[in-house]
Length: 214
Ligand SMILES: [Mg+2]
Image (cartoon, rainbow, N blue to C red; front, side, top):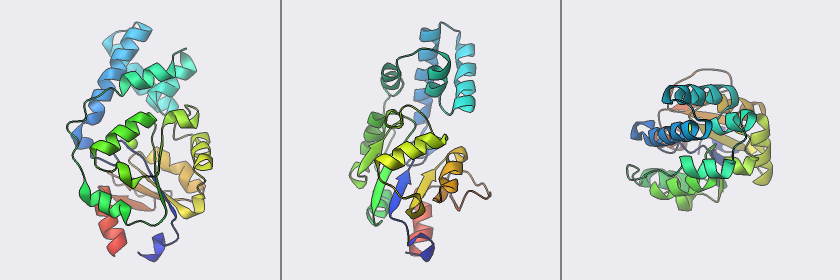
């Protein structure tokens, strides 16, 4: 392994749009369910539901965090409702499984979705066995990335030393705090050159092919 990653002992992966491509459009199903939930629970129109979902995401990091801050909702019911999706479009990614299995140390998932969603999606991708721990937003007391408290909570639970860790994410907002904590950061998907992003790659297989064999 190249020296810039040789100190890494903890490999932290976001789930949606990091472990699989947004082109699979799995998240569209979740967004439809979020809209349905908002319409039913808050008794609003489709247009207002779409607006609120975006507003909550921008203002609070996730729709749930916005709902918790501004409305009284049952987070457990919400998380089950919006993650009740069809995973048939996900295919096993054996190349990625081999890359992750070759990494030394702990490999964990930390998602703003639910823990069960992380388990279900990683199983569908053939990656379930690659990870030792799966953390959902319920494990971070429903405080989402990008808030520092979310990272602090999960890293304490999983006994991660940020200085020996790397975070993989498709949302650049969620790499700011990890960078400040001394982690290496990798943005998967979009290209963005900025101080808090150490690595850019279009997908994880490209990242590992470049960085592990370089
Ligand atoms: Mg993501």
